Image 1 (spheres, rainbow, N blue to C red):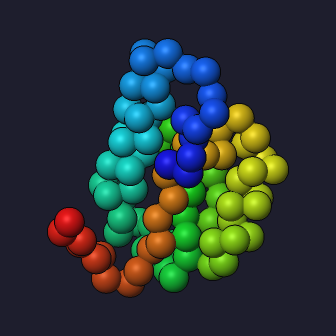
Image 2: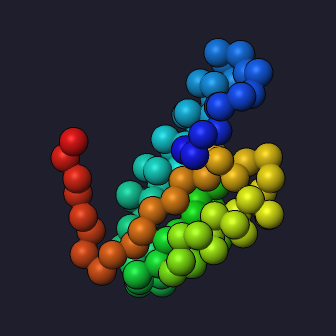
Length: 91
């Protein structure tokens, strides 16, 4: 999530709903990774409510388009770079 809660007057319930939706979209990407890598290799994929809403090779172009297409939700869209081999990061 890109600064989605910064400067907004949201209550705790709204914040939890946004975080839950973002988590669900991130998990959707994980479950559909094989399909995504076949269709969008070496691209950033944007997912909102379990749907691919855009994709681009250039992250700056993608975020600009998301800001234009989804002015109220752009900061809440899950975005992941799709590599030919799934990369797991342990933090």
